[in-house]
Length: 340
Image (cartoon, rainbow, N blue to C red; front, side):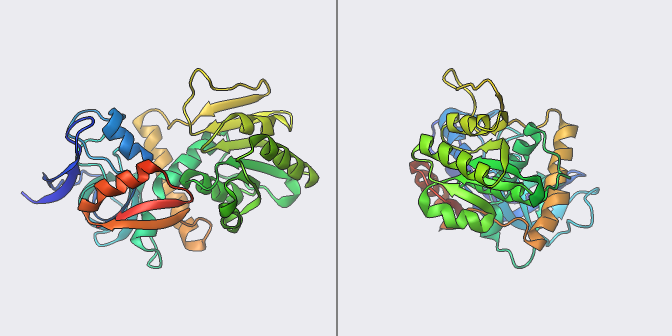
């Protein structure tokens, strides 16, 4: 039986270690990818430290990968052939970190609905930072009720707020909102403002003084004749996001941060935590919309670019432990990647 190397999480709080795993055989709608780069997410550390989204131990984390298709199942379309360069959202999250599915290994099993062919001009490291960012962004749009076929024009004066726009999911939000025709208003640290404008943000403010940021955003939008009734809360405090939307009479906010007993409420603003579609069929259709239909064209025509900036912090599976420690300390305006 063919085997490959993987970084195994042996138990909650344990020390990840390199081991051999059997290389899987794809089912009818699956592909096996030889991983060339993996992007790191906070969830990777939460799985180990807290046992979050882990069904059983040992486990393999890693949600964002890029690589080369090694083998395909009998029902996989011609767009996904062996030898094809692809990015993929792994099933580490939805399969509760079962060992065949996490990206912290040399070969992974992925459902074809989560796999996108990438252009030759896009490197594996940059491609690997796309999946979770884009997947979460479209979840936010779905929760708010924004349809994929939405296309506003400048005369519609529709604004969209992304709070914490320099984060991976925030920068994805800027690009998707702009592609739908919104005027994008955003918050981020000052060193990221010009970069976010290059992605499509019209106005970016410093969020370190939330009250001042709210005033600046509301004032700027109103001076442009723009109404902001929809927003994406990627990171940071929720209250300023609610206050901006309330400044236009209320609306809807999608939040990537789960609620707790201290979560603020504003009467005129409906906010919801981002959750995926329920049921396998609904989830597969949602994934296929993003990775099989929307993203291939968006990568080719430049509608969507990998963001934020990619930082390669090591090579090989052995570099993952140190990379996870770097991530735990916190990063800003960049996405950490390990190449295999």
